[in-house]
Image 1: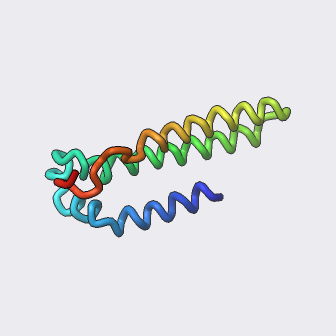
Image 2: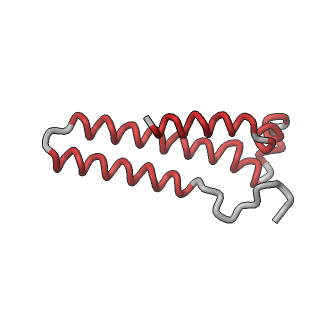
Amino acid sequence: GLVDLNVLVGLILYFLSPLTRTALTDFGAAMSNETLRFFAVEHITGMIIALILAHVGRVLSKRATGAPRKHRNAAIWFILSLLAILAMIPWERPILPGLG
């Protein structure tokens, strides 16, 4: 679905990103740099968790019987997924290490 397409585009951008390339060349050093660690590990982990939550919500809402239960399951899991996404957006984080 749309979530899977978004994750695919995100993974392509992740592996093409100069931040990721820099982090992967010296992963140990990247872990001591807050910005590189965020983009190399934390951001992608949070987005994969959001993907899993969205998929769980879709499966549980399809399996539920009755419209109220379907909608409640979808709402709970999709809101959890959205919260994971919002938590992993770099709101005030500098994009390039050393800037900002």
